Amino acid sequence: MLQDIYPYKLENHYNPEIKAHDNDFVLVFDKAQVLATVKESDNSREVIFPTLAELKIMSKEIALEDLTYLFSIKNKNDAKMQERYFLYQSKDVFHIADNSVYSFQDMRTLRESETPPKYRLLAIYTGKHLADWYRDSQYCGRCGHFTVHSSTERAKVCPSCGYTIYPRIMPAVIVAIRNGEKILLTRYRQGYNHNALVAGFTEIGETLEETVEREVMEETGLKVKNICYYKSQPWGAANDILMGYYCDVDGDDKIKMDNNELKYAEWVKREDIELQPDENSLTNEMMKMFKEGKL
Image (cartoon, rainbow, N blue to C red; front, side):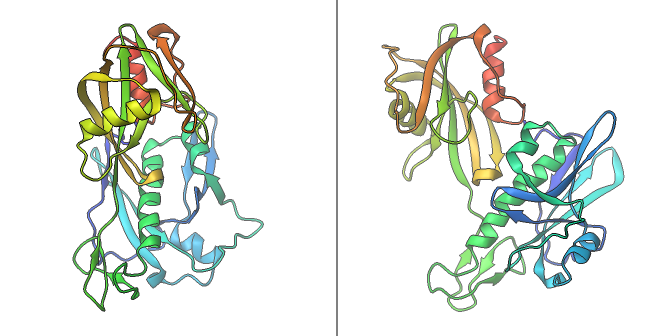
C-alpha cells in the first residue's frame, strides 16, 4: 500500500525550529495537482519536487516565512539519507516559467503510473492532507480572527480567543463483503472508474462496526455479519484515515444498489476479480487478498 515504504520512514514530528535550506524539497499544490517533474531513465521513472533553490528561481517572491515545515523522510539503512519537505502556499497564482522542467502533475496519474520511489508518493499524499488543513484553518472558526502557528505542536492557535485547531482527520471504512467464494465489487458513479469496495465515512455517535453495517445497507441493501477488522491506511487525498473490514453477507444476497452513489455492484468470483491499476490502496490490497484465497 501507499504507506509501505520500508526501509524509508516518514518522520512527521512537528518542529517549528526547522528552517528551510536551499536543497530541501518544497511542495506546491494546485487542487489535486502537485508541482513536480518525472525523471526517466532506461529502467526507471522518478518523481522529483523542486528544491527551495529552484523555487526561488521560478518565483522571486518566495520568502522563508512563506514556508511551513511538514515532515522528513529517512532511510533506516542509510543514516545520511534524509529528505526534508516544506509547504509553500501561494497567496496568488503560482507562475511557472515556460522553460521550467516542473509543471503541475495530477496526483492520481502519478499514483497509477507506479512512478518510483513510492515514498515520494506518500510525501505527496501526506503533504496534500496538511496543505488542505493549513488552507482551511487560516481563520478561527469561533471568532473569525486570523490564526497563527503553535510554537509547541502541529496546530493553529487563535491569538484573540485562544482556540486551538488541530489537523482534521476523517475516519472512513472500506468493506469487503464475502458471499462464499464471491465478493461484492462496486464502481462509483462519479470519479474513480476502477473496481472498488463499499466505503463511507463514520458519522458522529457511530462505532466503526456500525458504520460498516450502515454503509453496506445504504449502498447495497444487504445485511452483514462476522465483521472483522483487517488493516488501516492514511489517505491524504481526502483527509482520511481508512479502516478496512471483511464481513459476510447475512441472509438474502440480492443487491439493491444505491444509484446515486454507484453505477455497478455485483458479486464476483475470486478468479474473476479485476484489480486496480496500482497497488497503493487499501481497497486493492483487500480485493487481492480475497482473489488469492487468503481471506
